[in-house]
Length: 82
Image 1 (spheres, rainbow, N blue to C red):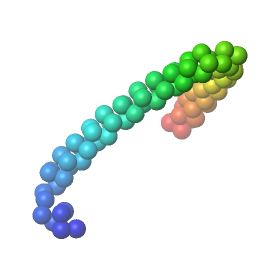
Image 2 (cartoon, rainbow, N blue to C red):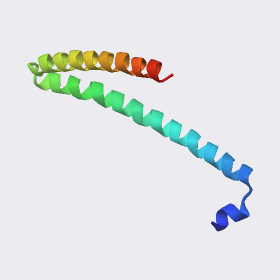
Image 3 (spheres, one colour):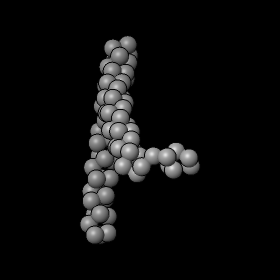
Image 4 (cartoon, rainbow, N blue to C red):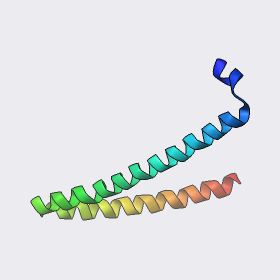
């Protein structure tokens, strides 16, 4: 609590904004890394085991259909809540 007693509110808020900016930058780097891994691993596995390509295609189609269902449901819920 001594920290808050010695520092004015504006300085604490600026520090909070700096931390939020850093978190957003870190989050972007983590997301881009995940995208590269999500694309790279299936490619590498498909090179080693070509028959696994069928599984990846089916998994991508199922993921796409579920994400569309979620987006439609989510927009309906937001519409009903407002």
